Image (cartoon, rainbow, N blue to C red):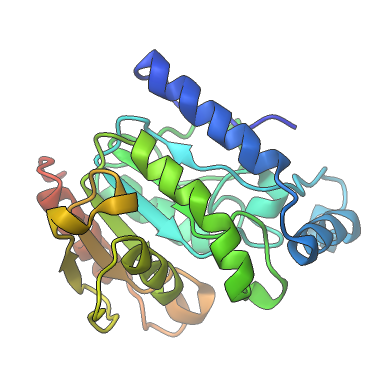
Length: 246
């Protein structure tokens, strides 16, 4: 399988992103994750029995000239592991893309498949781990094996200024990459400046903004609301010097 396309941008770094994405798709570094993603793709969920699952590593998606990069935990077994696009085809994605549309980052509020016409503006979505993990819990070794992909991705997203950590797992990975010690406690809306001397593997990222993950566990219980998500995304726009959307 080849990686889903990204919108057009500067030819050289779009090409480099495609190379990276193809490597992610073909990656087989972690035996446990490869076995799980492929078994899930073979077994399928009854509601998707007639669909062909992606069943590979899931590449990043969005605007190569993005100023804001959203970093999740990992693909969902029957979401991105099925569709091949981050946060696509599950309830977490429904919640997140609706917010991205409200805040001016997406041309439509839904994300159902790689050919649904969705485009992101000034935003790019990726994850700390690129394969669906059992129980949604990657091991430390799996996390560390996948981190070089995120490091290369941030280096290629040369216009990115803000990383939105969707959950504590992504936040810890980003702070580790930025060598931020001690690490401020994770909390929704917490913003951490990345000192220029510590950017290291963070590309041009100057701030990390924290958000609770848009999982059903958070959105169905009211721990994360649409208003809370909009506030974080608008803070990210402001920090990235993007005009606020309507």
